[in-house]
Image 1 (tube, rainbow, N blue to C red):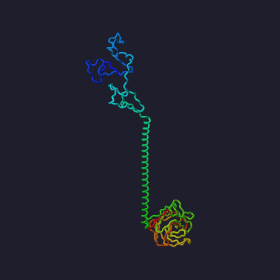
Image 2: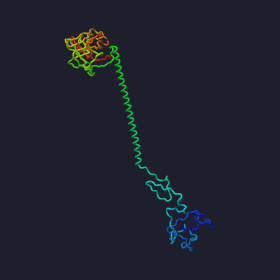
Image 3: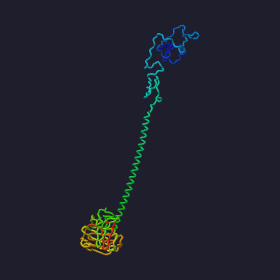
Image 4: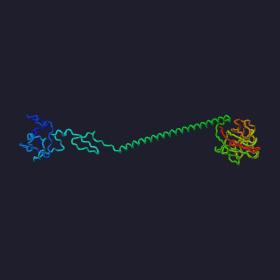
Length: 395
């Protein structure tokens, strides 16, 4: 134990003992820190009495009685007095007022990855002063890439959604426009058909169901018109032609796949070449191969005849006349166009020129068959051109 040079009984942490010499002597102010702990060779004791061998004779008050340990050279080498052992390092000195007490433990010094603060006994670094871990550059790059991907992805998704929306709007608009066009076309076709049916019904009784509408530009309507120039029947110039080049004969051209019973048959006719006796006309309820049909002719002057052909014997065939006369509604001359028609219902046959009734007859020889056209030559070669064939079925 180190000794106090002022008094062997003095203890700064306990009440002062009764001492007539209190207050303490100079240089021993109460509350001043105690002397540092002794070193390993600090067997310091009171020097013996007598003259100070180290005193400077020229220095006053250099005796041991006025010795001030803070102003003298270091003490001489240690005596042989054993040193006082140091207190354990892990236990605070209960007599040291500056030491940490066991009742007030301090929080452990925080540690950070990659950082070791210097060892400072009894000092704890506040958290606000502790170095903060640095964000790596890789983390910053990664965050930037993610943000860029989100922006680009969002833009791409927005662009795809916009394009899809525009494509959908365009498809819808196209479909709507097409639907309008189709609806308009259907409406126009229906209106035209209704108008035609109304006109036909008012002109040709009971004719309100159109079943054939053939412009006669080709053989595309499924009724298979004869188409052989050697036979004088052919399509040319968006029309159907019938030619007869033998005097006092006639030539028939049939729709071989047509077969009608009660119907109205209408067509536009123009005598292209011939003389005043050259004629065109219709066949119906026909078996053209065997020359069995009803035959109606009308020449360039409007003279007509309705016959029943039973075979091909004789120069004009074996035919029976049903009716003949003059159609006043006919536009005469070659090169003029007239609309001719027949309404056939049961045994009733009616003949029309330019929607005007010309005559009606009763005959039940044939009940159904083909339809067709003809050319007839009585004095010169005759060519007749036909367009716009229509058939209404009669209910």
